[in-house]
Image 1 (tube, one colour):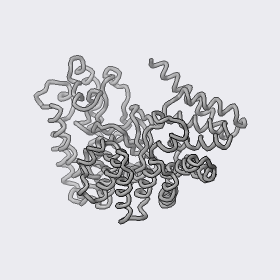
Image 2: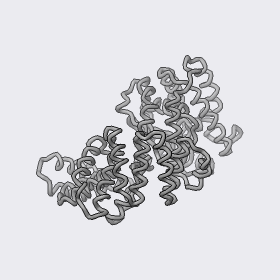
Image 3: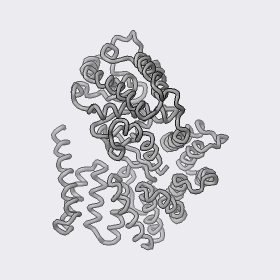
Image 4: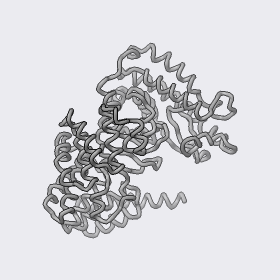
Length: 464
């Protein structure tokens, strides 16, 4: 995968940082202040799953993002703009790509309808988060796991009622829009129905029954009601009996397994994907688990098994390079990472890992042999994807090694701004601006970051 954890908690002296920071899953702070997980293969899959639905919604796939959030809650939401957020817990719960497409279609209904998490009623229900589509799109108490239904504790019913009073109509509208988008894309609604049945089981797990006297039930459609309504509509659609795309489904199982291997404890991965399983998802998941456990030989054996059958798969090459890089073997990582970068047309997240390996290989032997190539690779990566804090971080290291401190500080300001560290971003941008030519594009960018940081700090101070 090349999934990378958040940069700030891993801040270390340069030599250790270059040998220990993980691959391409980046953490950024979205509207809900949760970590966003970034991975080249996952983002390509989400794009291909969503594109027919986005087009059916009358939107441009180039402008709509499907974003993966590192949160084990089974959830999906919109937060303004043309972006749909899917929690990792939802991907883990889903059995098929078609089920996730049903969620995306519903959330696109919120996007097209202009619905988003805002303060209509939410100021009163400040401890409540949106659970869109899931559990009838109801809001549940903030928190995790079995504590979710604490919303029904004393003092919470009124807040819930005020919030749901406005959200009910939006959920019904999003349901109708989701049906339209799936139909327009020629995608079956079976996955949507299957996922609702899973949510019905979640209702039972959390102790939610019709007999409960709470505002949730009087103000919002129940999941079983929605199943009956949606199934009646979907069964009349020509796409109802259309089989799922087998290639898309196989890709989904790969991504689901690699995400599980990255996020779950290794012991859980070994239980879910035992060694007698020899398909691609099992090798993928175990490669991450063995790598996390420090078993380099076993981790590389899993990647080699993948590459035996698909030697030019860029994501398998990327994974092998990531494992070697993070195991302190950057020289050996260069070959597979360079090839993965070439095969994907310099995909920015993969290119970032390659650039990291180039710098780490030099750092290991106190050389600058790869520095020029690394700078070229990373500048190209941030030109195509500016929202990549780790790329800016490594690029800043290169600028500093070259003695170009103003641009090193500008790169640092970019990284800190993306990571939500606005005070540090302001300081770095101010220092960069003082050393850059007046009126140059870099100086203007430094001024922009400084202004954004000042505004963010002022908003934070106002809301204290």
